Length: 637
Image 1: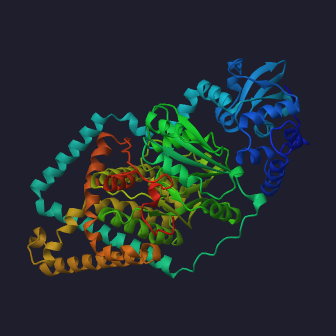
Image 2 (image 1 turned 180 degrees about the vertical axis):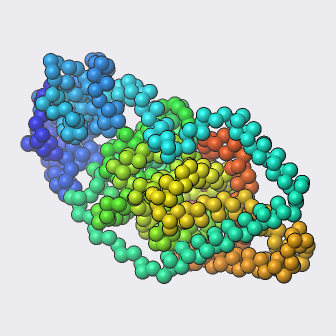
């Protein structure tokens, strides 16, 4: 054991020479590692590990010999469990530290490196003189800590967000109780329909028409705001010495087809690996994904974090658990099927370096890399292009709070932790978090970096995915509207109106879509059920108004795909009218699940473009290709 003062352990004196003398590395490797550590203002250890010239465990043993401290085998000499109550488990897993023994008034901490020890004690309230350190293997330390603190870490993952801002309280209401309430509401609705059919249809038609016009106004305003604004100037380049450490979470679940392609994409990233940590987050009993990953040679900057079994089994719960293991100052999210731009993390670092403190979240642009696959993939790509390239940035420029996408998100770690991470029970944790950020006075910005995703290219998987999104929208709206006055006070009138316009119109338009479709009957000269109550001229005027809104949406979609890499979709814009009705089916599925199983995460299957390619060609992809490269000529990838 050894006591360490608060000195700089980034480059222990002569440690590099010691490594060369003992044959761990060559003098050339040492020179390059020193230059890299000085350039990035990071430790020599980080540079050597990132370069994959020496393993983490070997470096820990070398540090122990150089500093003349003990190297503890945790398996052979287990820690004193009675010390556990003195420390926050989250801090132990973040810095890879375990309280081992207490000798007199001094607690011996086993750490993976001297740097980890200094970082850990700097966050403790008790003076550093009460601690000494020894070194050990990272895997042994984390295995002991995660097993010993398994229950508190599991509970925390499910309930990081304060209950007042979460939907988990709904779990106290049984599905039977929700079913009774729902059936009672349906019975009342049917009674009104039977007693007052025309009036009931009129009320719903009026609401559908009102929300349609509000939705159109919101989209056109966002579209105009984005087109009329000056192009965003690229922020100044962040100096290498000020680059942040970035940890990116990649949740995986039953990803047999996509895992190996994902690793190939991640290795293309150009961000300095000494400052990068990619965490592949897998469920404890997901043997399928774990088997695939075991066959892959992971670089030292990619690690696997295993989430213990628990409820609910959702992506946000997995990310909540993995968050404590991350060392980065910036926390990012990618999905399993993502193909991020090679320089995406540099763009993120530049934006955060020059941004005001209230800007705590950056949202990248999402595109689909299999947009030529079939009709559904083309329509999905057009929809995403309009949303992420025009509507979402336009809403931000209008000063509205925006719902986040589920990937290509980057947060300032301190703020993310202060808000409690993600609501583990909300199946659209991204949209919920976007508005929680706004409620606490923070801002989100859309940045010009693209990530390729796989478009859902089969009807039923598309409906399942969209129903999960719509169910989450319903849950998010109800959670934030628990106390409307409080929400209004927190975000102000303008954002409050924007919140209502976005959520209420989106949900109403999907659920009431059949009523709006009925107005097409008038334009085709067919009778309409409301003709007994409303003049034919008014119905015609409404039908023409709806046609004008369709043309406006077509204009937005056409503008979104006018970029060179999306021009092949231009001819498909007119058929979007036949794509949107799928959302109504998804909405009714979402309503059913809101009652029957509100926390159920309907898993989106990835790798469908890959499997279709293999089926059509009757062969496997070449080893150098991943599913992101099925579409030739897609320069953005």
